[in-house]
Amino acid sequence: MRQSPTRRGRPSTLTAVVLAAAATSLAAACTPAPAPNASSSDATPRPSTTQLPTTPETSTPTATTPATTPATARTTTSTPAGTPAAPTSCAPAIVARMNGDERAGQLLMVGLGSGTSRTSLDALVGRRHLGGVILLGGWTAGLDAVRTTTRHLAGLASAADTAGLGLLLAADQEGGAVQQLRGEGFSRMPSARVQDQRSPAGLTADATRWAAQLRQAGINVNLAPVADTVPTSIGRANGPIGQYDRQYSSDPERVSRMVAAFLAGMRAGGVAATVKHFPGIGRITGNTDVTARGITDGTTTVDDPYLEPFRTGIQDGVELVMVGSAIYSRIDPGTNAVFSRPIVTDLLRDRLSYDGVVITDDVGAARAVAAVPVGERATRFIQAGGDITLTARPSTIPAMHDAITAKARANPAFAAQVKAATTRVVDLKLRMGLAHCP
Image (cartoon, rainbow, N blue to C red; front, top):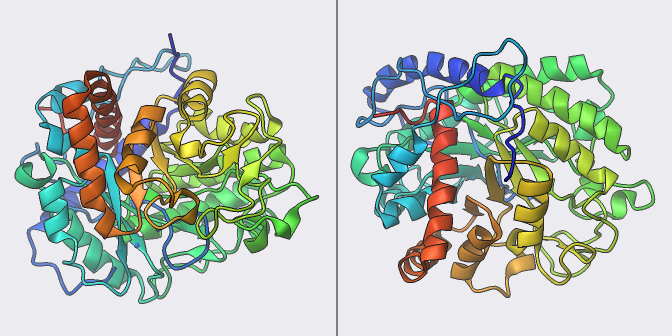
């Protein structure tokens, strides 16, 4: 049986910070929201990138209990000495009350472009019961403009439309070429290569400040940090990471230290974080967002030292792990990682003992998966052991949602996987204060 990793204090800390802000958010939700602004596909520093935003000013669904009620976290198999055991999660009870359409919706995250009306996703969120939105396209109008949009999005949560669950609101806020939220109120974040010039303690201090800005803007998930290691032999020839200085170092031990430092800052600022792009895209040359060529890694193995930064994030209790779309010939030849059970289940969940939420890199617009029918991109990811399918294109949501619900109705084994995936997502929302036990 799979063992849960030790959660070194993160869930309780994050819950406390988020819940403290939730009371303010609830009050703000009752006030008409000002005019809005608005999206992610993370593997490139192009306008749309995959990153989930944390919402300090986010309203909680009206169907849930007051924000002052502490969310319960799942019990882990090992806890630090002297730490009281966490109560059993009520996520299974919440999921048991959800219908098939609602469960499928919680497993989808959709992009909202910066040039798009804040109301453009309203019908889609309600009709498809979506669980999350990511801000894409480069939001440069500043913190207040982002907060206006996230406040509106948070207000879409309701018993009828989102099964009483709050939305994950994400952004790609790594730094350097990949900083989707900019302008007044947001610090200009340096690239990971520059961040690496800081001490770990210095990076934690910086990341704490960046997380506080995200929370103030209504973002509750950051699709960062990058845990990929780019070898010096490839360097800038690595299209998705090295070309844009998105890696901390070519030494996986150094990457691990800086990943841990960044995560500590996000934790202190009350924002859920994401390590990406599992199992590492530092050894390829092609960028999976824009090409299906040069995306096969012929080196990485299941006991590769480049996995260490991901292991560090898991041991630190990171909330999400993002799986990339590259192909790993020494693990599962010919299969994109997002569709690979040997990678998502056997390696990430079993070998590295990760029992949290797994999210895709963008599979809506990415060229690496363009040959796969749209609906199958979601169902194959769930079958591989994943949870949230992220798409930068709202037009792909109906096909993905329909594929999940149809397959769940026809296949009991797949229905059980959907239920398990939804339970992991709901458990995360409980720990973030976006859901409450009945």
